[in-house]
Length: 487
Image (tube, rainbow, N blue to C red; front, side, top):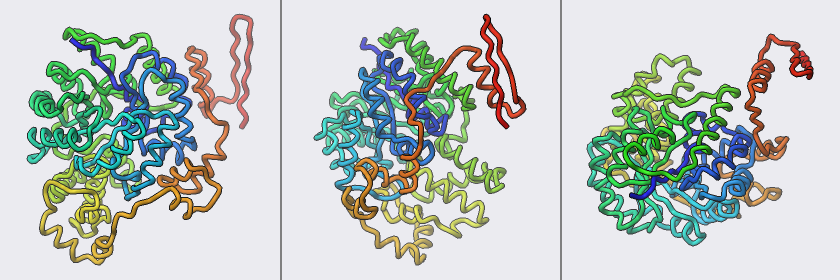
């Protein structure tokens, strides 16, 4: 019986699902040696949204982050999640610039790339997969999972065959972004996928949104899957992946083996628990079963953003109505898979419908683009009445003229002029020039996150954050320290 392998998602997907991508470079660097010792099969390290967030909000250089991480972690490949047809998920940026991105990822230590097409149109990723293989990247292709009357086991068997035949991936994995898969469905879909892999390894990735993630992993384990995506306990569960510790505990009791370093896993858990406590960040918690999740299918991150936006509008009481409307909008649009960017389009239109008090009185541009086929071929056409309404809009006629225009790094350089490095030019696909300038000016450049895990260090951090404390002193073992907080 082969040993269990783990793709660790803590600093990428778990960070995104639980901390909203707020994990800084410092927080990653200090625990990187333990992650290197842990024995992971791979580390899910970054994505396009992480690159954008790092520059726009953290004022950190994501290319430099990956380069340093690759120097600290040498035992497992660092992986980047990418949409397989465009660099910016909300507008098309592709062509020669895509290969330039891949080249700079390789130069900065990324050796594994996960290409995702939101509707599982494998033919749309042929060119970019070929570019990745030419650069020596390990190519991993997800089969994006959803639950609907048209996404059957036969559908996923066919998509597996397409992926293996057209893309020649090193690895295929079942990607369940909404945590929608059940143990019962796991027992039927895994055999359907495996019969068409032709020897290609299979991995499994789900979220714990409905509380069933761990159970599904254990069912897949019984069916022969050996590689699973999990997260360190403080960032696991809830909208994130199952906890590495819980999964291994259960798997070992089923008679399976693992070569992971338990001490390194424990060090990771202590590190991230400490950061959550001292920085006021949430930790993942197991959730109760929620049948409604299978109806609206909105990923946890989308719901979190929706709550925040409704609260800002003073309309948080309409959350349940918006989620019910999302069910109807998804049906009207032909059951798109609720994954980025399609899930955002569905929820945006549902929100507009509820806040306007009339369905489709206003139609979002991205919904029109979706109906026009700008986001790939869909299994089922848009509802005829909705399509007729869109066809009669002047905006639809404008958007229908759009064509994919290949982009190169020279095109970006011509737009913004001199003074930017090639990597900064690539980042301008995601952010504005002011963001790049602010990133340059940000100081000091972080190199590590000093944990200071002692009770005293934790106490001092809490005191310093208190608005009511102006002065305090500590006297211990003959050493006296006095601190006065300036007003």
